Length: 171
Image 1 (tube, rainbow, N blue to C red):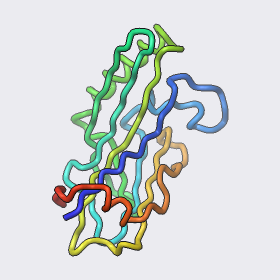
Image 2 (tube, rainbow, N blue to C red):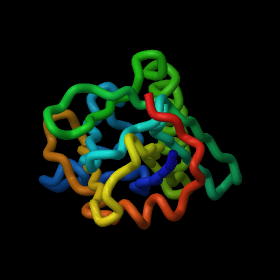
Image 3 (cartoon, helix red, strand yellow):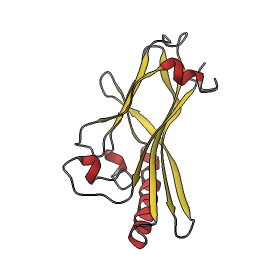
Image 4 (cartoon, one colour):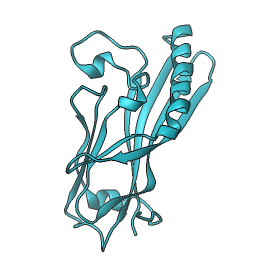
């Protein structure tokens, strides 16, 4: 069984500039986590490990050296041919609490506060695994009504599998 943890990192400064693009006007670190669309296209023979999808927020303050971080389980939701994810209901309050703390830091020290938003997906082989020449793609959106943007497109499965230990179990 193969485990692939792809950390699909989208870093953002916690300040937003006005522009028509939702990624420019909605900071993922502040967006409502209940409405943040995430999706993946996995080839046949590749599945998502149980509780294998996570969203991680991190923030640091350069003026104090302090940091905040939290990791939250992403639940799978039906989405046609794609695998879609949303923050698990049980994690929404904790995630919103961390977002409030980060927003307070940004208000207190906007030039010293930076943050990252990342998504990790641990995958596993099913029935012998995927064709090594197949590819994986993933997308995210800055808001529930905004279009999905690619995070990783057409990443060879063989590259992902070569980089990870084989310890994930598929549901």
